[in-house]
Image (tube, rainbow, N blue to C red; front, side, top):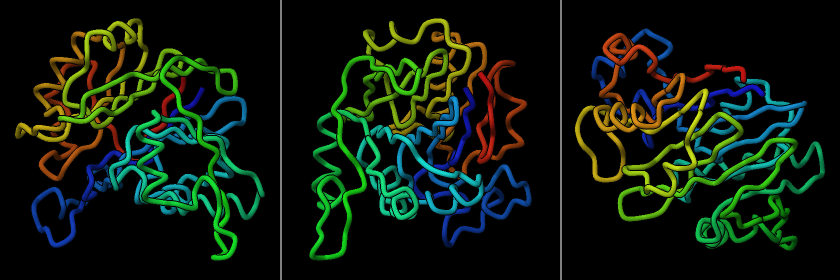
Length: 251
């Protein structure tokens, strides 16, 4: 199984429009962060987690040949507003892609993109996704996928565990029942927005603390703002790193 960090940035991306701070002006390519998303590849199948605002650019950068399934963590704009970029894959494959999320997230996506699950032929829109509500483990292309309920401030979001890898973006706390689903991980990718506390996201200090409790062999922080330069990675614990766009990991 191969993992690719498609995007490691927060909702504004980095650089942020109009900003001239040190990170937004940085020449380090690892400080260039598109909106958060990850790709899981197994036996020639491609599983996309979230259709970020930057999906088209990410797919071109990584030469993604097709998408076989989409998982959604929640329905905030930076995680779903690239959804129409799935049309290119549809034009080539003529397939409707299965997607998986909580029933609440699917309902929000349906309300914001009314054609996405049904098509609107009189407007020229095609159905792109086939919705599947999930709240327990399921098998997808030979991988056991487990939804991990998370708290994203006052709302619920969903992380996903794929075998011994877990992706937990956009969260400020992890319920005890969910922590019990996160044992024996090889790789953890988790929200770590910035140093400054935030009501809807772990900051760096909080992410270090919770990742220490989870105890994965390697942990990567994602959904990073322009408050975090890649050069600060040396200040993290020995098994903790900053994710960056294009990072690939093998399991």
